[in-house]
Image (cartoon, rainbow, N blue to C red; front, side):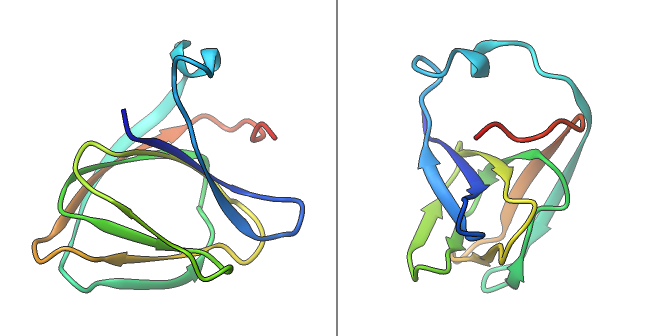
Length: 117
C-alpha cells in the first residue's frame, strides 16, 4: 500500500518517510477525524511553499500530485496513495498537479493532537 508521512524535521524543513501499516501498529488503530472534504485541481495547478493547515490524511483518488521539498526532491503520488500530512511548521512544501488529468483528492481532517516524532 503506498503510504507516506510528510512532517517537519528538527531542521525546520519538511521531510517524507514511507510508512507501512504492518510495521506501524498505530496506523491500524481507529483514529478520530473531524470531517472529510473532496477537491479537484486542474492539470498544472501549483501551490507554492506552504505548510499543512492541520494534521490530515490526503488520499489521491485520480490524477497525480507532485510534492516538492526544500532539498530539491520531488515525490509523485497517484491514485490510491495516502499521505499523512503533518508538516505544520517550517518552510513547508510545494504541490503541483503533474498529470494530464485533474487530480481529485479526499482530505480527512484529524482531531487536534501533536504529531508523533
